[in-house]
Length: 368
Image (tube, rainbow, N blue to C red; front, side, top):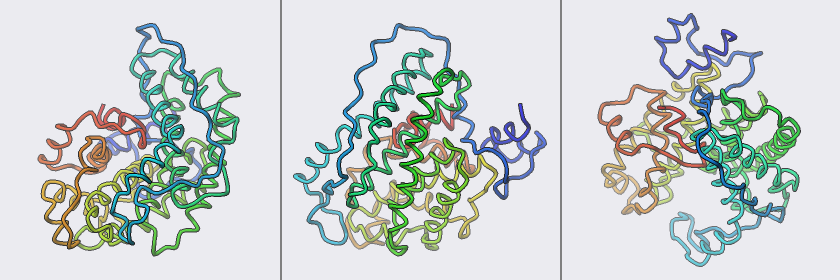
């Protein structure tokens, strides 16, 4: 195995292990090497066990205009008042997209759990169906529409990475399919960059971080340094926004949902930092350790929401914090930093932490 790849795989294991293995301390991205994901993406599937059911049909590719209602339609500038009718329309119109995201993630997870190639083949069939239809590439879109596009790209790229880098090599012999899928990802990634470059810098909030995560995941799929660099640039802008107490002003403006949106911001930011670390770029020091400061503020707020009530001036809506998967950021966080005993106990009490938006079983990726 090439020495740079050994070091990349060990990057999240700790500085002492890196130095013991003869690797240099990761400070800057090493030019000229292929982009890689964190070490958990190399997990190999076990020997096959059970018989696999037939591959279900892929959801219908969505190739129409990306004009979707926001679940906060009609709300004021805080965008914190849920509109049940608009939320129902959104779910109906985007149902096939979310079925694709969650379905591909589940198929990849089943492959890595059971070792049956049929699961990986089915995931490829679903992706190929949408790639052949040039799905999600409409140039007619609104804010919610371009959000759906980048969420889908992040989910699908992260799931695909688990097949692409798996030690059991499930993509071997599928070169034509993977070429078409990766070309589709490339078109989506370029469009996502275009979409979110349009966003004024003073309005770049959690949506920008999720766009950056989608582009980072696809950058590694495609081994494209330009996409990697764009994702890092968005991350760094996010870190510039974190104040001395660990708050994000644009998320505080969400009033009753300030805590929820601070928490929501951490998933993509942590994944970007972890992917950067795997490629020799240490982003943890940006803005005086802003990422850890933000994480500590969110953890304090989850355990005591009155902190966010006092800072935002509004009681906090907590329904978006009821699912364990909302805290999947804890896995890359505790891989990047030495977590406190309290944080580690909280993380373990929630495991396994899973969300298809960050690659599926995030516990397996960072804490197998």
